[in-house]
Image (tube, rainbow, N blue to C red; front, side):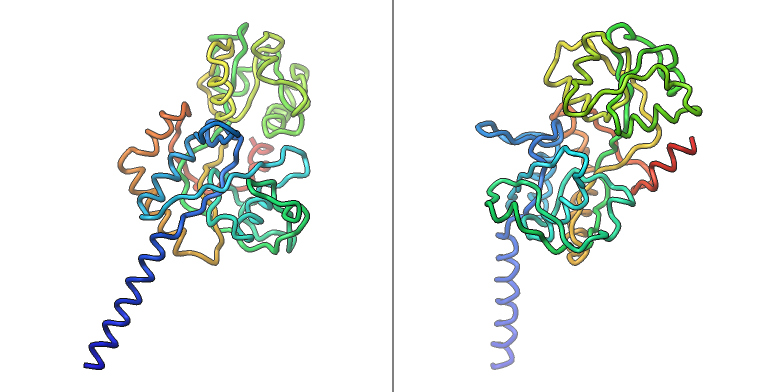
Length: 307
């Protein structure tokens, strides 16, 4: 009788623990201003590809979803790696979505602490304090995010199959960007005299392209999708060319919780097999490209220089 009661008590405890886990929200951090991946502005409903995907993953895991919105810094001193690590290490969320999966973004941080990015609900103390950092662990990727050539009205219809096809066009690029490195180093600097550098955050790169001030640029595909959604009548067009070196995006969590990463990977596999992830991209106005090998991109700068 005592043995039966003990066994029943253990079973009841496990059941209660499982029920509690099911009620525990799956907390995912998303950038509040990264359309069409994730958007959350005051007074407007949350939207974006990563929002739909997060909802589907939480549903697959049988847990309610709680999104922690944060604002990524745009200055040159910002570090997406440290921002994500601080949010995770502070317990603001268990996963950060839309994370670029590169080797240098997943290494153990060189500093022990970092400040939190601004996030919804942050207090004055939150903005001042530093958080002890952990070690990041990635999920499997769920989308490929390449650079693409975008054409201005005077270059519409120009066939682009390689960076070399940009010769003779008036090129614009934001200083210090990945696109800047690609264009400036191409074929030992062959395009340098055709490049106009703009200041990020001050100059409107795509607006200048739409006005016809320049003929072409090289930017992240998602950024073009966002501009096109906000300006449906824009004169700029997609070239259809994707630079061959791009990064996958996925989730990142803490290495101290491998079970969570395993559960997320299973949900991603199931959703991809059902065609749901591509469907979420279409619903969000995103040019969806499935993940590509390598799952985690190596030294992108060396790859660019060696091309």
